[in-house]
Image (tube, rainbow, N blue to C red; front, side, top):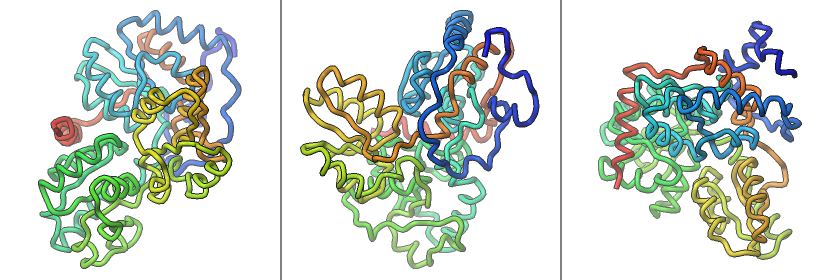
Length: 392
């Protein structure tokens, strides 16, 4: 690629999809491991990104999720998890453009929390989240009908993970619920049980189960899984009435890969290793780990770890690699928990060519890939987010 050749020279449907100007919703129903990352981008793209960002100056604010490629993180003004980045965006009201290097639900949250005069840009519209796609507005509305027919809807409080669509956040706001992150899920559930007797937890069953059992002392029997692809969620009215936690049948395609065998294998290979995993992992993996926490928790734990300590990390590989390189000079050995290498393929759709295209377009006065949440959805989704912000 040369600097004289634009990125979107062929405006065919396929080219538009590859460039992130259109999206194929079917592609987000699940992700497959793409193997290793592509070869490093053309050095010309680095210079183009720097030049476009310089032309935009303070008009642009670039957010980079922890799971992004290094080539993208290099141009991020701030890095963090999904909620931290959305709050960072809201704290920059003077930025005309918010370029969100993450996935679609994150950009939606940023649009909800930023001002009407700010525009949120997602460099590739095909960067979705398979977990968020596991709960659609229609499916959740049908679930609520099932709970109503079982006679329990009035005592059920919905709690939705940040990793959900704006529609699901709006559903949560309409029905008196709150949003949670992986770091405040315990507080969110404690609040929910003060408001009602049961919780509908969307869309990640593992975070809901791990928080209820590990942090709140419930039993696995207190939890049931609602499968939206089965009549009545695959549950009887009696099972729904007896449950404290009604877990949506959703999961993270990356964190769900880790297994108990992964933990046992790394302990056998690396004596004295500390196993640290994300709470989106399966319950048996979390139970076998030494520590459990969000991406921010993982980073802080490794920052505080003594020199010479050994760590196996169960989260997305881009972050694990970055942390391994960062802390190697301190003598900390950091490895990926699973021997099978897998990145989050949807997150990795944001690459340097897409970022350059977005920045250059903005610098030329052309707004591309703007993420906008409609007013009604934004209103109710913001209610749910504000309830989370108000948690003690």
